[in-house]
Length: 467
Image 1: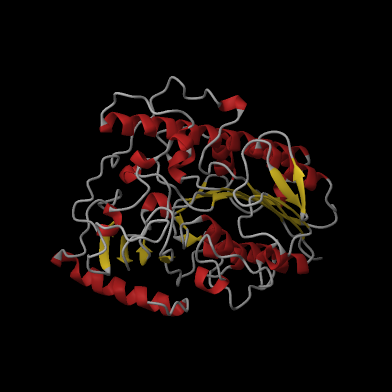
Image 2: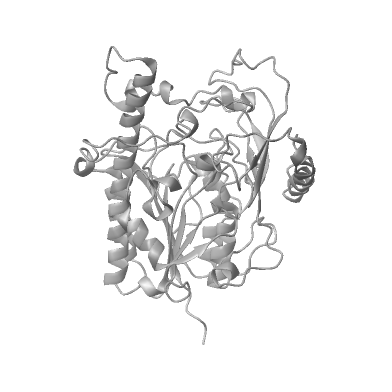
């Protein structure tokens, strides 16, 4: 008798940092439903993205290939739906497939979602309140809050599925993406609370690359549009920075609270339908986010708060409750892992590796515990320099390639005459906050040499031949 294939419910948010989840030790909020999912199955403590920006991360998850091969290096690139994807493979192997919510990979023609029996997606970023959505290409208006609507539509689709087939559902929330509009239920949450600032809130970037000293994503640069009210007068620069941080963080965390509630709704529904035991449930975000860390908001950098993805995975039949995984995994590995669990051959041209064996307590001897990262944007909204690098369990080596540029493509004057590339090395064992660049420290010269060898080996392995 053929083994029953599991359903897969893949829940993903946009820009949810792991350090804003209580199961990851958050100091700023609690997330009881996310904690519930973590306690049901596994929490991954070293899950990372290969390119910390929304559309590229989504393309990696769909394709199991790095950005330069799946064609989505930046937000301006559209995903060519004619290529091989995880949902197409599952669909060809008897799965019902669906995506509801944020797509963010282009719309129309070859950019529409493919490989899905049903899709209903936001145009672009989507709206928090009364959003429009493309229901199989037809633009429809919805009333309510986006997080609730996506959950409602997800439950409706599961409820009306063909129960003779397993399903693969991608439930993609807009939240907590900028500009952080909370719902009515949570709009006053944290009103009388002071959100603690991170230790690196006033980072001076001493000894660091020019690429981190000059960008356009400092807390000071949050606008009245972002914070949804006028700035108070009469404050010092430091006081205004703190005020902006409080406004930003409270709305950000309010959006997360709504996501948390709706994850609870989904878990409750699966339990009521008695299909939770047969369903792989994943919660993740397309990348991390800076929550005042280093004085920033947004993502893009290869630094921990931006690079790290929360990743929770439950499959009660297989994964022991309360499992914690320390091995390094990436969004590049998701597709391969799901295919492994459903018993479908993993295509040779996918570049990640299944971590199913790790979840079973049998870490492969050749598991690399190394990540290759590349951020490709040369002309981007937040002026973050293009860079690539390698992260291991102990170290991180980053190569910044060129000067930062602003949205219009004009060089930032402070850095246009600097010498490039510029390097940073961090010893993650003693410097978790990544404030001590030890690249030029003679004591680490052999580490630098070994990491560079491994970096260029991985660059070749993943067929990234661009300088």
